[in-house]
Image (cartoon, rainbow, N blue to C red; front, side):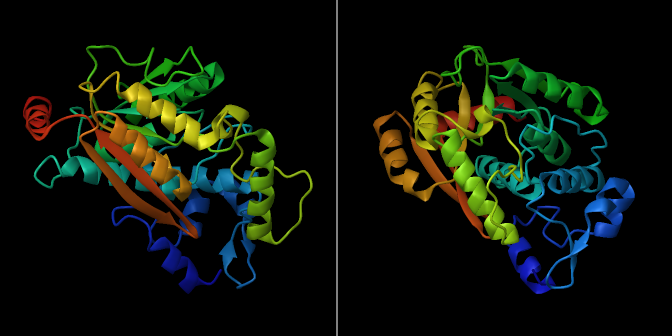
Length: 319
C-alpha cells in the first residue's frame, strides 16, 4: 500500500480519531521495542507489518494503545480477539456524536455517562477507549469467565481505568440484557460488536479470504489475523439472530436506556432489522455509516424514549 493510498483509507476514520494519519512507527517502536521484529517493507517499499500475522497485529495494537492512549499494560490470551484499535475508536466517537444530538450539540463527558458494552471480551477495548477519550463509566458484560478475568487484570494494571469499569458475567448464553441490567439501572448508551459467523466453518472460510486479500497467500490451516475464540466470532443464527435477540430484550428495558446500539457488519441485515424495530415500541431509529480501510460497516441505534423524556433524561442525569 502506498503512502497516498494509506492516507486515503485513514481519512475515512472519524475526525476525532487519533489514528487518521499514518502510524508513527518510530514512536510506536520506542513504546514497544518488540514491534521492531515485525516491521517489513511492503511491496510499495514502505515500512509496515504483515497484517496476516496475528502476532504482528497484536504487537502493533499494543503499541498504538501505549503511544496514542497511554495504556501501558494490555495483556490477554493469544486465543482471544485482538481488535483493530482505529475501527473500535470510531464506534465510540460516533456514539459520542449521537449523544451530542441530545445535548445541544456538545458530546457529554465524564462520569455522568454510563455505557454498557455487551461482550467486553478479554481485551476490554471499548471501556479503555471510552474512558481515555471521554471519561465515561462502563459496564462490561461477557458470558466467558476467562474473558472477564482477563479484562479485570487489564483494569487492575492501568490506573486510569480504576473505578471507571464494572464487569459482569452473563450466566445465560442466550440472554443479553437480562441478568445484567436491573430495573433501577440507567444506561446512557449500549454498544455491541456482535458475533457474525453462523459456524466455525464459516469463520474459517472468512479467515481464508482475509489472509488471501492481505497477503496473496493460499492457506489451508490459517490463524485468524485478529484471533478470536468461538463465542467472540460464532453464534447460532449468526449476526442476524444475535441482533434480533438484542432488539427483543431491549423492549424489556425501554426506560432504562437512552440509546441502544449495535454494529451491523452485513448490509443485507438492515432491511429485516428496520422491520423488527418498527414492530417494537422504538420511537427513534438511526443508522450511522462507518468505514475503515476497504471495509464499510454501520451502527444502528434505537430508543424507546419520547422527546420530552429525552429532555428530562438530559436535565436530570447530565447536569
